[in-house]
Image (cartoon, rainbow, N blue to C red; front, side, top):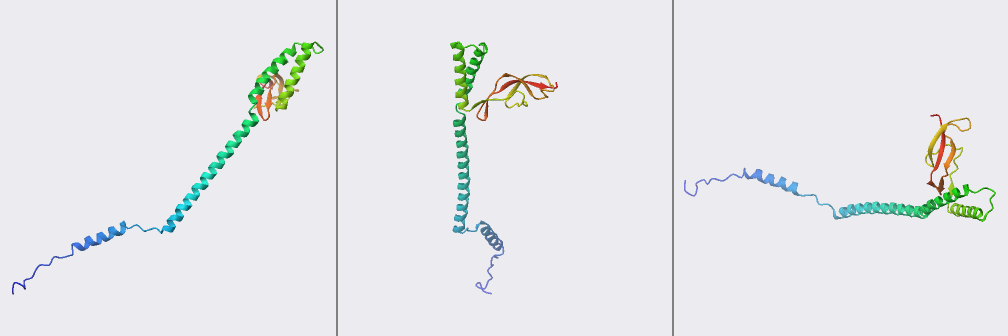
Length: 185
């Protein structure tokens, strides 16, 4: 054998073959499926539409709440003034309690006129007296100051007497009636 015929050891590629297979698997995992640009745009548009609908509903709810609050302010805005005027009316009523029914003096006539005019104006604004005597006790409109034993005329839970008159302003309690209630206790 000649030198040229000598066998040259050939390196085996068997060791590299698994490396190539691993590289291919890694590349396959690394490749993310490309999403169609149209599908991606449609998905973003759908998400945006949902967000817009949600925000629109939220704005509508805020608008409704604002309008309800505004309506309440307009409807019940003068409630504080009415409450103050009722204290003045109560003072006039206490002054009139000391005047005889048949007294025709200018002072008595002036107090009656003042009381009638004040009540007329208050009732014109929506103030009404709470009708409590002989009615079932309503804790939303009345404060029970004391109780007395129930009778045939006044069964349990019935208002027997009114200590201080109560008033409503439209649909709200302005001043609760202070009452005596019949009870079994």
